[in-house]
Length: 267
Image (cartoon, rainbow, N blue to C red; front, side):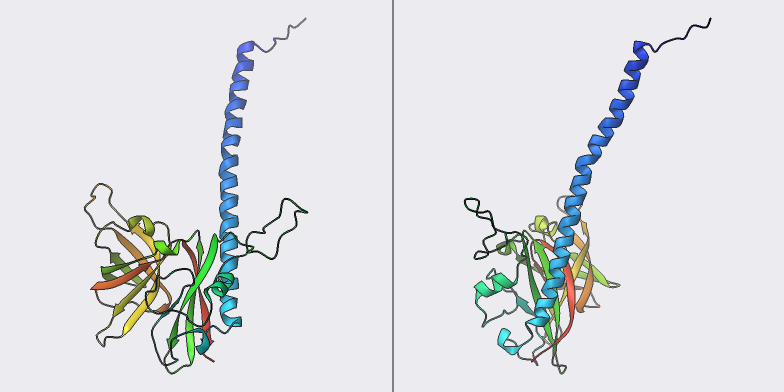
């Protein structure tokens, strides 16, 4: 008669150890997965809001003369900013700031009255203000249209926006390299994806372009090295085709996405 050998305590402990390692791996994936889901939802909301913002520009005819201070034959960029006195070029007038705030923010949150029936109170703002948007536009000379760039932001603090002067620019295909005088605004550059670049051409005309930050260059081993960003130009505007040392860079905080609206007629 054959004797069957049972499982020893050592083998049970080894099996428990192996299973425990596997469970720890699963547990480690759960928070990472939750973070990725949250990040995807965040990106989805911001991109959807950007599409809605672009529609707002068209539906509300924001190229109309009554919305702005720029005549149709003026080729300067217009920065439409309702939240701050930060004003790099010129700004929208005729429209109350309160109305701008209602227009240029995402409606991501409902406000509930917990003391009553817990229904949303539609008489108050339905947004936490975390998601906002603004736009610039460039009237096109002799075309009676404006080229509009809409930008979506998350947790933007407009008072943190800065302008940096005397930025060096070296052009490359589709973009270039911007070298800043010092690292004062380095933290802000890590919190946004787009910057607005302006300069004066030989005819003393203002030129400008929105640029996406492709790569931030900073050597931690050499604190004295000036920070640089590699950028590519987005649709509206242009960039110089020669190196310059007199560029102005406007850094808006919290910008996530950019969208160009097709030429909007000036009515």
